[in-house]
Length: 382
Image 1 (cartoon, helix red, strand yellow):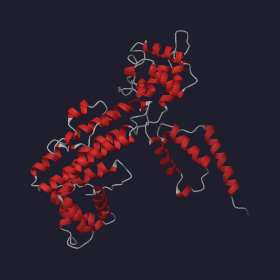
Image 2 (image 1 turned 120 degrees about the vertical axis):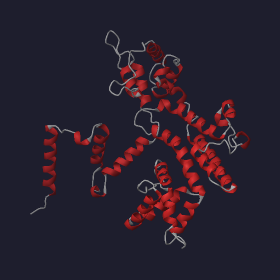
Image 3 (image 1 turned 180 degrees about the vertical axis):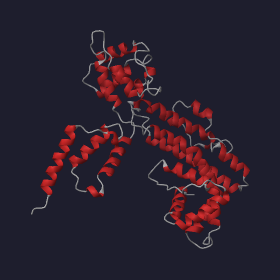
Image 4 (image 1 turned 60 degrees about the vertical axis):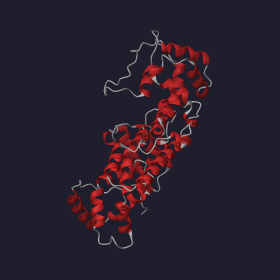
């Protein structure tokens, strides 16, 4: 079944109809479900499916009762279509399964949508996510025995769990056991789950950059591995991103870095009492000086600056496009590119709330002068 279509149909059925919403509230009271809004699922927003699916699941008793009692339920049309899909036990099974499986995917995506440097965590986290999904439908011993997970024949049914062990979520399995489900529906559900797991793993192998030659070396960004890693990785990265630097200088500074006492730079942010951001931590390390007041790691500073600028997702690009849409509105069609660029610079480079900006006296005077000049040039000639 196409869950996306059902979620969209339900939302648009109630949208802009106060009468339907009022009637639906009575069914919420009758079925004793919480009075919550019907949410809109947007297929282009990858986080919305989990949120809208969970809301629909919590409202399922009221939705079933409402559409079953609707006067148009017997007539061909949207009401009958929604009613039939809601009454199909497969709908509840899929919603419960999605409630279990989507947070695993969304948590990974959300972590790497952050604006802080996480490129050093990308490879181990990709590997961990791949393993987490494989063991949901492939027997553990085959996953552990595989020298290279990408060569594992995960689509081979002989390597997979049976329906009694494949991961569908404890809540979903409990509902399956409690309800009197015909064997055909149950078989169809497990086939869909198996296909979902296979498709996710196949997508990971096709889209994730497991073969990128640079990613394995980026473990140098993990402060906990500084003492154990040899200089080879940082020299390789320097040759890739800062080819003008001398390898011998990089090697010497890396070994000097390994001699730093563990308490030379704290990894705990004193304000939040949490682990400090990687870029902030390395910024403090690279700012260290010798007893003579000379920068201790001048060459490593260049290398780590380049590494910490590497993007780990397309989130920054998406934020920029979103920012453009919010600034360059229909009411600002004549905005010059230079003005748009200035607005974006301010929004990107100012971390505090916009209403906390305190313009300087010079800024106010410049703004007044620019406004006066603009009004003068555009005033109607008399």
